Image 1 (cartoon, rainbow, N blue to C red):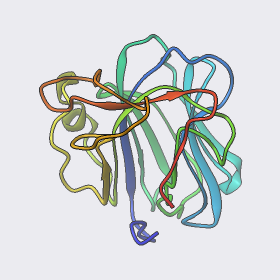
Image 2 (image 1 turned 180 degrees about the horizontal axis):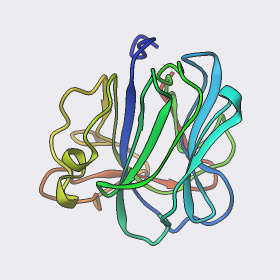
Image 3 (image 1 turned 60 degrees about the vertical axis):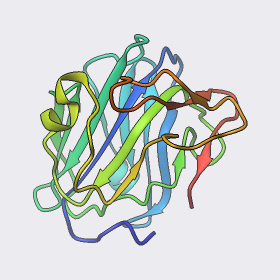
Length: 193
C-alpha cells in the first residue's frame, strides 16, 4: 500500500463498541505489512491485543473493552526506541518497549484476520498516522472530532449508502459521526486491499 511509510513513528486510532467474548476476534489486520509480517488488533476475551509477528510481539490492555460502551483506542509506536503505548479513552492503559524498526502496517482488513477470527461489534473513525499522536486530542473528551494529519482515515459509512445491515445509525456521537459499521462476528469483514 502506498499509505505505509518506512522508517517512521506511527499510530492507529479507532472507536469500538462491543460485547464480544472469546479469544482473538480481529478488528484490524494485515499480512505482509511494512516488514513483511502479520499484524492484527483484536478483542481477546475482554481485553484489547495488538499482535505483531515481528519477534512474536504483543501488547494487551489492562482495561476491559467489551462492556457495550464506545471506546476510543489509540496505539502509538516509536520507530527508534521501540516504545509501544496503548491508550483507551484518552488515558494511558499500558506500555512496553520491544523491537525497534517496525514499519507502519498496511492495514487491509476490517473485522477479521484473512477470513477468520471475526469481530462482533461496531467500528468507527479508523485512522492511522506516520507519527506518534496525542491520544487526549483524538479522544476529545469522548466526542469524535475531525481527524487531521492522518495518512489514511476511514469514516466507516459517513456519506455512503449500503444495501446491507453493516451500516448503522448508532455511532459514538451524533454530533460528528452519525454512522458506524456493525460486524456480526460470523462472516462480516471488509477487505480494502
